Image (cartoon, rainbow, N blue to C red):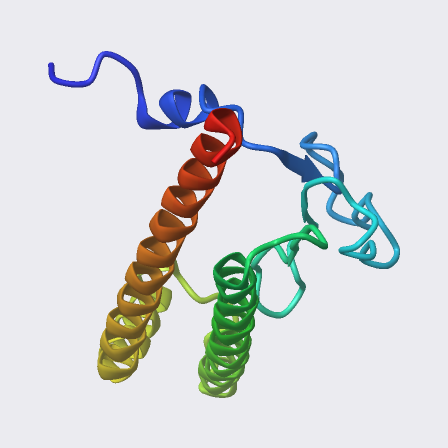
Length: 174
């Protein structure tokens, strides 16, 4: 086997600074999420904050930390991340709203036809139909998502190279 460890374990060994706004323990379905009532101010936090999942998009919102002395490239990367996260949340909010509306219509139509209990097989027909109908939207989303992530990855690489060069200059005193 090529990888000795699972990728998730490998990523945790990098010690990337992340602060979680909620505890990662399971909670009862009827309780409110534990966490911050309002997102923290990005200027006052020492690391990125990851909040509880949004009720419409089901995505965890980020509060990005930044330093006052960040470079123009690091600032551009941070702003791009914020923009992509907003785009992603907007897409999934619209998608989930459409999904739940169509699911409710499907259930309502079956109940009106006299089927009080809808089997998993009938629901799978709805899921397949929904996915087939939205195939092009999902394809375009995936292409956009990969292109945006590739741009951010390239920018993050350039920021790291910039940081390494600046650190090297400080050490040599040039």
